[in-house]
Image (cartoon, rainbow, N blue to C red; front, side, top):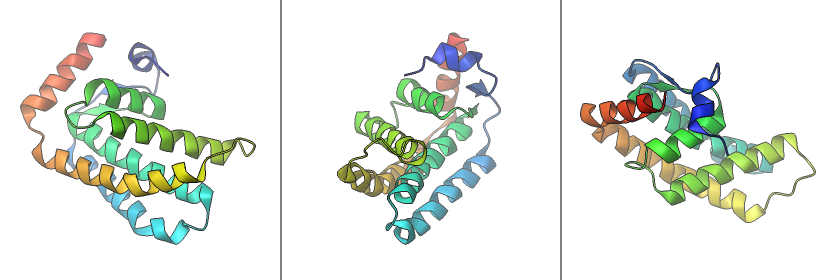
Length: 157
């Protein structure tokens, strides 16, 4: 687990930027593209886990960019979601994204670490729900919510 204070101090960590609806839309389209190919990679545990994770990540990052928060460190993006986006995501969303993150890392970089088949199936199924939830959040988020999140983040700097 990383700390928000650490993430804010990192070169490519959490940074405030201008809210960007165009970039937000680009990332949600990347999630959609990943959903479109998910069934085509299901014979591979590695690519199923990786593609599923990126559906989560692109969806989350789309909302972050809409708010005006950039971050190139995935664990920091996950911590930002946990601490600042509870209006949009619940504990299960956070847990599932963390499971997807761990499964992707373990399968891609640590071939000796076992990854439960049921976990891969669960994240594959749930990533689509997460995407839908994010699309809904993008359609209803308002400027007051954006500013409140940004203000809370500024307090941490």
